[in-house]
Image (cartoon, rainbow, N blue to C red; front, side, top):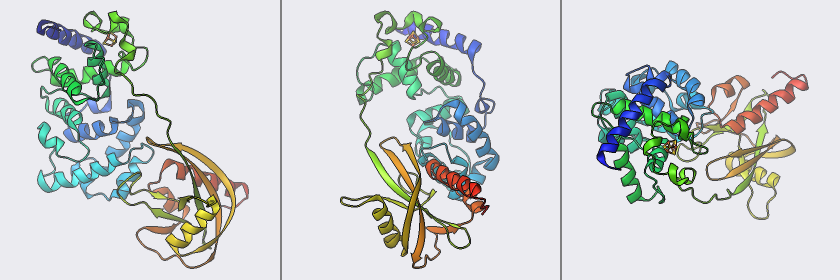
Length: 364
Ligand code: SF4
C-alpha cells in the first residue's frame, strides 16, 4: 500500500468514525485514571461486560489515591467475576507506584506507562492516545486483525518481525493530530465490522483498500494456532461449618492464578488417591484437622485459559483438631463470605449451600 493510500485509508476511517463512534462511559472523560482503568478492564473482556464493573470500580476507587489506599482484598472484591485477576492486582500495585513516584498522576509517555505493572505497549499506546491525545499507535487484538487483513498479512502475527510490520501499519493509519480518534476508530472497526468471524466487508469503510478481501482470505487472517485440547483436572473442595455455622475459607497466595482470592479449602488428587482421600489429607496437612468427608452435593465445571476443572464439593465434618485463626484462612459467617473476593466457582458452591440450607429450613 503506497503512502497516498495510507492517507486515504486514514481519512476514510475518520469519516466513518464521525458517523459511527460508539458511546461508552470511558469515552465521556479525559481523566487519564479512568481511561487507564477502562483499558485494563478491556484487555480480556468485552465492552458490555466491562461497563457495570467499570462503574462500580470507579464508585469505590474514584482516583489513584483511593485505589492506592485500598486493601488488595477490597480491590479484588470489586473485580470479582471479571476474571484474569492479575489485572486487578497489577492495577492496585501500579496505584501504589503512582502515589510514591508520580504524585498520583498518570504519566503521559508510552515508556513511562509501560513501566507500570500490567501495562504493555498497546495499552500504553491506548492511554497515551486517548487520554493525552498523542499520535501513537496501538495494536490490541482488534487492531492487529484489521491491519493484518488490510495488508493481507498471512504470516503468523505472533512472530516478532511480523508484529513490527503491523505496528508500522497501525502507525501509518494516524493522521496528524488524530491519534485519539484513530485508536478509538480502529478498536470500533475491529469489534463491530472487521470481526474475527464473518467480517461485514460490505459495510467496511476500508473495503476499497483491503488486500485480503479480493483474495477471499479475510477470515483466515490472522492465522489461528491449532486449537489445543485443554487438560482437565478434578478437584475436591470442602464445605466445613463450625458450631457457630461459620464456613472455613482460605486465602490464596498473591502470586499466580486467582491470587489473593478466598476459596474453599480443597485439593486435587495424586496418583493412587481418591478425591475424598486427597481432601482429608489436605485438611490434615494444611489445617491440622481430621474430617469425616460426607456426601458430595455439587459438581461444577469451570474453564481457565490453560485448563479446565471440575470442582466436587463435599460436606465435611471436623472430628479432631483445632484450626487456628491467621491471615491465610478463617471461619467466616455468611455475611463475611459476601464481603470476601472469591472465584466464581466457589461462589456458586456457596450459593448451593445456601439453597440447601434454605430447603432444610436452616437460615444460618
Ligand atoms: S474489507 Fe473486510 S476484511 Fe478488509 S478490513 Fe474491512 S471488514 Fe476487514
